[in-house]
Length: 371
Image 1: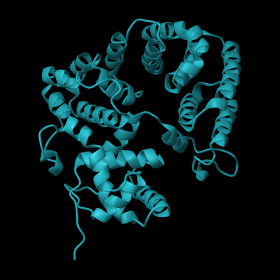
Image 2: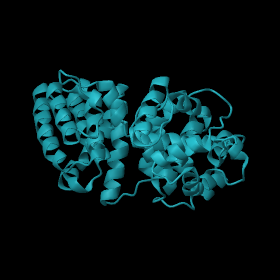
Image 3: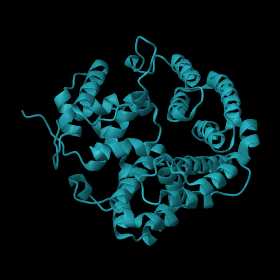
Image 4: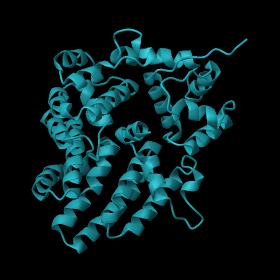
């Protein structure tokens, strides 16, 4: 009797890719990546070949019909009961993106976000998404943000009107503007997106609003410094660091993502307006701060701090001292980091570590789309 096969939709493929990435930290782009996934899955579950992973995720084809056994195995690796359980538990997300039937199953329908972005018409879409709360589950937010980001990359003329239309829509603030934030500013006029996001942030002194302002201003400060836009950089940096006393006072309550950027990106301010000795003094203070902070790090916190430190490495006066801080952080979670990230000379592979610790979902999805 032939084994049952299944047509995998684009949504299901993206969902599976994201779940595997969250489990392994590996972005499946090459045959070598497929070999790594084959080994990891086979070691933990039952055997799956490199060629099977390659055909499902890398090989160019209009559709691929893997055996149900393969899909069940990968679903169990991602901590679902089986493939049916994975599909069922993500049906709400699918219904949100594809509310008009089964066309998506054959990869013949665009999602609702893609349609609105291609048409550059957001009146109905805005009303539709306003029904979803800010606290929509992460899994759904990732898929919403991913579809919006990808569609905007393909339809750049819709970017500015999309930013203006959705900067105050709670679920899109969380999914597109936050989880799918783009620190590399690859989307056209992305500085307008962050400015609109900041305009939609409430003007009170709650921790949540402080975090939102730090998050947006940090992205703009980094972008304007790297692109040599001195006046916007100075304005954003001044707005950002007016929160310094509040951030230090409420450090434990502020999420790691904006906090790490807040403290590391102050190096830009020293580069632009302070002396080398002043920067050196600040770096010494920052190293002490990181040393104290890491005592309470979760694994997720460790990845955010490591990525931010390494991203700033070329701007530091004492990069070796910060590399030692990275080693110290890794050692707290040495069973969680791949063994081959650090060689016998105690040097780490910077680019691989940057990729592994990158918490920006847009960076992950952009690599998938290029593939």
